[in-house]
Length: 391
Ligand SMILES: *Cc1c(COP(=O)(O)O)cnc(C)c1O
Image (tube, rainbow, N blue to C red):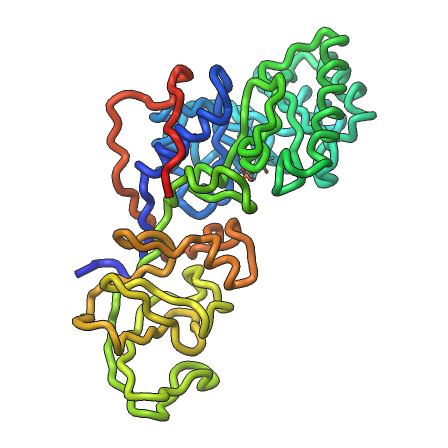
């Protein structure tokens, strides 16, 4: 019996494995900043971050100030960077908690400098250079002016220089190299000004797994740590999925031919059918678009989803699966024994990207970390990392 209605098992041993693969791709001596924004892509940021730090991850990247403060409150002491941008009202709390801030405007430099003087603290900032992402970040031509502003601000410290690569195909896309060239030009400019950022970082997962190296001392992967790559890239087979989304059967019913199931009677029984109802719905992150085309793993078999997925419930066909009982666990995403519903496959069927699937896992889904015992930190830079898994 499972006490939970719906839960996401978070396999910390798979996380360890993926981090070691990342370490091997990053190369010796390169530091790992693990991106844990959006609650670690839905996996649960606090447990993921604690485990990653125990593995040897030296910094964390988040999306919002709130996420950074939540990690501090949970006892994480490593450097934390708000990757995107902050709101001005959030700056004091960030300075007090030693959170690092991504920056791309000179008025923000001046504001942080004034605040730093008042609080007698230093603001540690990472200058974000827009080399082609076009979203946040200062254009390369304006970077020198910002670097000078940072240099002239006694309470603002240049902790890092960063840029973000836009192609999910990383180094396989021609534009990536142009982005890196533009970023290198900004690094040379910083050097001419006598500025020495403590770290320089470019690589997200796609960039890292397509072999892009540069003279950069830190990498910033997110999705690959969770066992997923953003596109069909070499290296996907080396990773292990971290999340498995499960729910337990709450009701079984035998339907006669012609009986409808779910909203809009989108499915009707063509044969006498045994259905199982499970308390998982689109509110829990099972995409509504999988209605009538998804499946669940139960008792070593695959059971098709019948009709519409509703907010709280989903029905599956268990007619051909012997012995299904109330309380049996069904897996809608991830691994069940030696079977697996890969998130990439689920995303393809639902017409979205894997990121959206794990990030949309709902609030009421309990995250249940499993495994994670460590004897020594596995990310020492002498660790060559695991060899590719044979598939
Ligand atoms: C999300 C994010 C990352 C991580 O990207 P992945 O594709 O998940 O590896 C790195 N850097 C920045 C600035 C990001 O916003």
